[in-house]
Every structure is written in C-alpha cells, then in structure tokens.
Image (cartoon, rainbow, N blue to C red; front, side):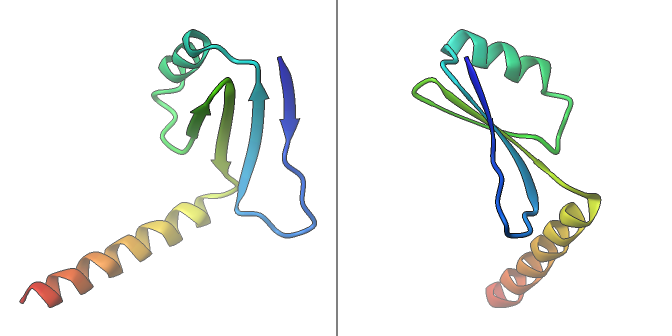
Length: 79
C-alpha cells in the first residue's frame, strides 16, 4: 500500500490523501470507521482510495451559504 499526499503551489481548500492497493473490503472497513466524521469525503476506484478533508470550518460555512442561496433561488423560480 502506498500513501501519497497531494501537494500544490496553489492554495487548496482541501487536504487530500491517496492510498493505492486498497481492496474493496479494506475500503468498506475504513468507510465504516469514519462514518461519524462528516467532513471527510471518501472516493474509491479500482484499488485507489482518496480521503479528502476541508482545511477549516470556513470552507464548510461557505459551502452551506452557497447551498442556502441556491435553495432560495430555486424556490423563487418555482414560484
């Protein structure tokens, strides 16, 4: 199993950890153990698991605000 941390010169809103050589059973085990951590996002494809987490609560606040704005806009369109 290899662990690769995404590094970039740009400012990122997320931390990304990539794990290669992960079986489906291992992925499901990780998923079950992290169900209480709402801010984490898991992505699995053909033995590669990506675990993403926001850097700060500010990211989550911005995401929530955008969601509320879109919801209000859609309600206005619906009439």
